[in-house]
Image 1 (cartoon, rainbow, N blue to C red):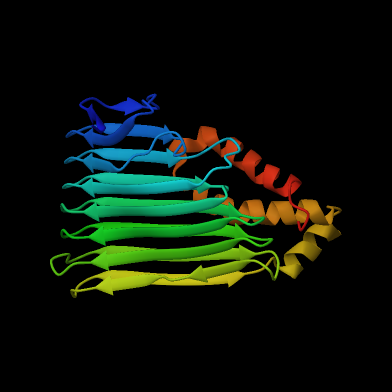
Image 2 (tube, helix red, strand yellow):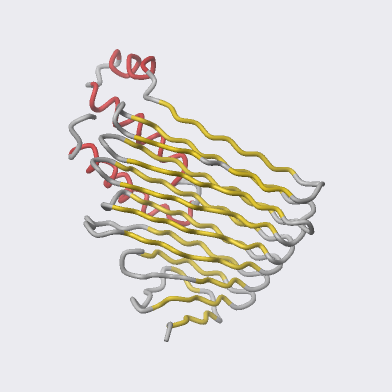
Length: 265
């Protein structure tokens, strides 16, 4: 049987059992969790009225096995979900993550960061499903691709017939560091009603030579200049939720480790 945590009081940075699969957050509760998704495999989170969740997915170690995340989050009226996901590499990474805004006046923000190198394969399917009225949210996915890595990003915003007054945004940005890497973006808007504000965008870019020249003209070496630019590119996403400020240095350290182990950079 799957193990369920029922949270009746507000908790911050609570230690979670490795066998945990489901979380139920009761009304008027604020929850903050940090989860290593290679150890804890959450499949379902339910957030009741007037409650909030701040969740950080972060693996602070080398993990050589395949990494699969398959999670659904359900929001009631006036609920809030802020999810930050950090994926810095396993051999194969498969992410299927969906949020369903069933109630009214709820918020769902999803911030995902990845760094794929060597022969890693990453497949991201991340969606905000707007079902109730007056909800809002954004999906922001940013990542680095280099070596022979292959990445597919399938971000989606789905707005149902009854989801009037929805405000939604989807942004996918990737930075390619060499010609042998592969990246595919599939940003999708599915809108089945009027009276909504929704937008989506996707981009594949390279390091800006003018920015590199500027930093080198200030006495910085080329490798350090590249590191600063890539760190700045990623940090605009993983620093969105200030709840996890204590983890920002650890995430930056993982970015640095990627530099030190990569011959292209």
